[in-house]
Image (cartoon, rainbow, N blue to C red; front, top):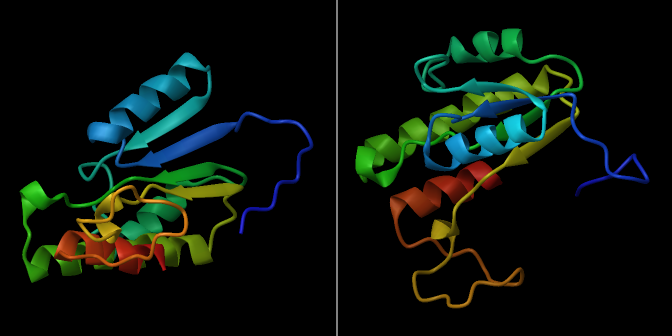
Length: 144
């Protein structure tokens, strides 16, 4: 549950974007720059979340009160097999472990509509998650 501490909207002082070079991440980073918000855009070449060392590397990047946006995932074009699903879940484990030991001011996880049944149309807030593929299952697990 989100708890707001400001009565009026306050821009973040700095936003760290995991997956900043991807399809959604690039637009988010550009928009944050347009708003004049300091942004750190990280891709897998900067920090490989599949690797255990990513916990310390990400911890070294995050400052107290940063906002963290997590968009990073291996997309279906990188693989639809169990191995890709497990690497994605491992990435979730690594950023979650980092968050256990950091003092981010705000965390946003950008998931996927793949957590819903392919026939769920329209998807609503009350729609039950029912992934039909490994990519959706991965997002479902990471969102929990």
